[in-house]
Image: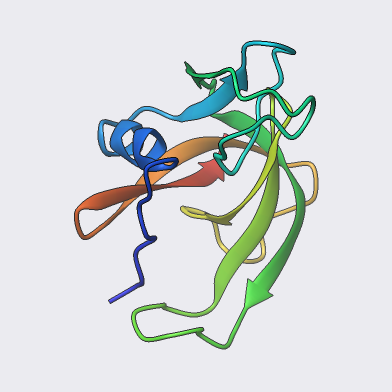
Length: 128
C-alpha cells in the first residue's frame, strides 16, 4: 500500500477539498499570493490572513524524473515524478498519471486528477 500523508490542522482543508474532488490552495488576503504546501503564513509577505481558493487544476511540467526504484511497497515502477507549475503560480511535486514514461516532456500541459489512497485523495496530474 502506498503511504498516505499526515493530516494536520493546517493541511486539513486541502485534504478535505481533494476528497471532494476539488483542488484548493491557500491564498493570502494581504498580497493575493497563492502557495503550496499549505502553511500558517504567506511565504510572499508573511501575513497570516489566509483563505482557501479553488484552483484551475491546470499547469505545465517544469521538470521530471522517471523513478525505477520504488521508495516503499505499493509503488509500481517505473513512474513519473514531476514538478508542475500551476497556472496560479505555485509549483508542486506530484506524479504524472495516465501517461507513459516516454510521452512526458518539459513544458507539457497537465491537469489535476485525484488518486485515492485509503481515506484521502491525493492531487496528481495527467496530460491535458
